[in-house]
Structures are given as C-alpha cells and as structure tokens.
Length: 280
Image 1 (cartoon, rainbow, N blue to C red):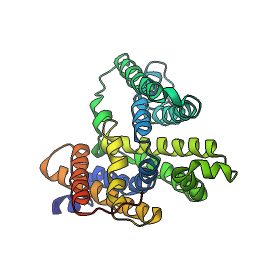
Image 2 (tube, rainbow, N blue to C red):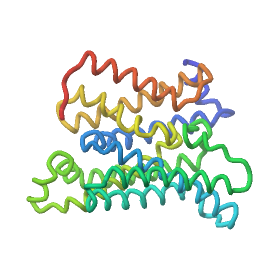
Image 3 (spheres, one colour):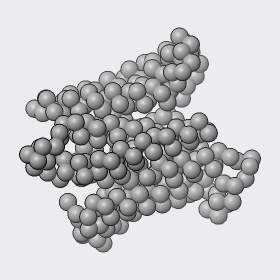
Image 4 (cartoon, rainbow, N blue to C red):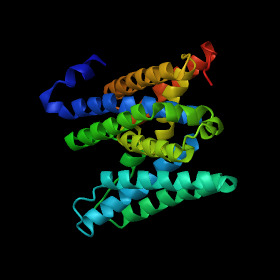
C-alpha cells in the first residue's frame, strides 16, 4: 500500500492523483446524503435513480456520436437523467403511495433497458462494465472538475436547508403542521441524492451505488449520538474506505469498486457486532 501513496505524486501516473482527489471530494457528499438516505429509509429510491442513470449515459453517448451533439456527453446525460428520475420518483412517492414500489421498480428496469439499447446502437465499442462497476482509475481532469462542482452544489444546498431536511426525515407530519413545505424539500432532497449518485458512478459503479450510500452511514449510526455527529463519522468512514480500498485494489491489481464495497461491508459487520448504539 505504501507504493500507492508514493505513486500518487508520480507525474507519469497523474490518473492516481485524479482518482484520489475524486474519492476525497466525493466522500463529503457521500457522507451527508448517505446519512439522509439511511435515516429517511429511501435506499430503494436511491437504487432506482442510480439504475435510471444508465439511460442518461446511453442517451448522451448516442446523441454525441450519432447526431454529433458535442455538448451532450455521457456525464451530462447522467446528470440530466438523475435529476429527471428524482423528480419523477418524487412525484410518484407523493401522489401514488399505494403503488410506489411497482412504479419505482418499473422505472428502475426501464432506465437500465433503454440505456443498454442506446449503448448498443452507438457506433464503436463501449464496455458497459465500467459504468456498472466503476472505473475510478480511468477518470481525468474533466471528471474531477465535475465532481468538485457537484460537491459544492450539494454541500451548499444542504447547509442552507439542513434543518428542513432533518425535520422531514424524522417527523414529516410534524414538519407539515409547522408550515414547512414538506413536498418541496422531499423532492429537493431526492435531487441532491441524485446528484450524489452521479458522483458515485466513477467510484463504485451503478450496481454498487446503494451500498456506498448506505454502508458508511450505517456504520456511523452505531457510533453517533445525533445526526450531526453521524454525518461527520459518515464522511470520515467514506474517506477511509474509498482511499484505503483504492490503495488495496492498486496493490493487488483488482477492480477498485468491489474492493471499496468489501472493505466497507467488513467494517459494518464488525461495527454492528461490537456496537449496539443507534440514533434512529
């Protein structure tokens, strides 16, 4: 693992520095949004949004290469689809509660299916595995800049509306009685989760996004006394698992996404066995 930290500063291996920086910056959003996902118990919704993103990636690739719309990159397509699916799922969960699971499940499958079809019809070979299971070592400067911008956006909105988000997560009915527009803040929270999901694609891939959103926060929940300490612990755990998992995968020449998830899961199992305290 020492060699990994040495090679980070090697000018001939700048991709390692980009991967490490993306892991560091993105961990802040992972920890914050992961905490709300765990407390609000919306991991299924986060999973649906993550799988819908493949449709946006496929659409971005198809329009870029077939119709030569140069600004429509796979990453832009992912962001647009993430926000659209968050708005759509938010509408479903508010107005169609009786059939919420079925509607979200159908949207989950539709996003994956349309994405795979569009990738298939896009000229040239594209390996969908890099999107499904992550490719953090393949990131570049443009990816790093995008993650920093999205990270700042998530952090800024969370700070501005932190108390509102906490109120709808713990007692939505009481918040509504106090005059808080719970529907608006619920959908806004889903949009922030969707943006965070986009950042997770390069780190662990679409398939394991839900794990990365929930496991560090699940560990933090057994260490914390309140939501603020849970967020701090969640960020620190995300930082540790991403960077350590990246270093281990580099050392043993294994895919980084699965290694990060395995490391997070081991820590989680240890935490729930030896620590019983929870804040929710």
